[in-house]
Image (tube, rainbow, N blue to C red; front, side, top):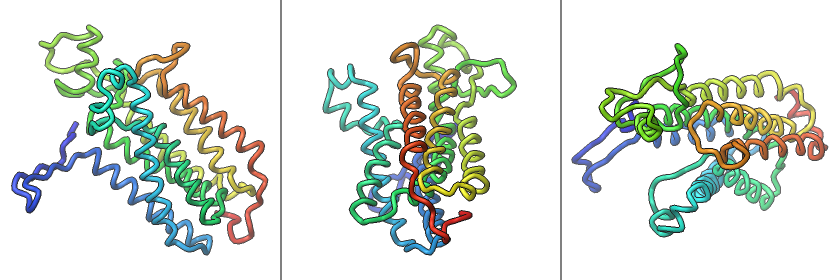
Length: 276
């Protein structure tokens, strides 16, 4: 666990500079998505410059959506201190970011007469790659961890980590404990799953699909299913019917993917996109 990668005390102009591992991994995720999107557009003989606009609006919409979802999760705290919660620096939720980023990109593509289906099929697998990179940042930050486990896969985070305080609040350990008990490294499970599924979609599945939008639909189904199952071993409060917020939104993602696959994949790929 290394939440702070680098801290420079006497940095020019601003005085001090702190580079957090999570922030760095998120930056790497967006840059990776940008370069891969340009590469995918070139393969289809499309203007690669649009990759800049797509990533820009995905980032803006993603941050806004992730923030709004976080505030929704913490309504009681928002009611008590609305300005403090809204303008605090903490709190970004992936599913909110996915929805916000998707809406922003759709608006951009529609306004610029771009093929929604083609871009969706490219971006879906790239989002898996970006999320996988982001989960590395989560692991080093100590957030998004799983429940206690005796499995050989379990990892032990240091004292005063998120895992430590969770187990302390649940009366699983006492403050005098040197470290929390081992937990499932759900961040690394999700990282591995995302990288593997992205590779399979890009290399083997997407080239065989003849309809635009089908790859993105499968992305929603696979991503939603994974997150729904992962939540059973991840620490998150229950919201409704014994399910967490993320499981509820995962159900929505799977249903959305199924609806898109059945009713909105009518556009056939042109010849220059077959096999990619």
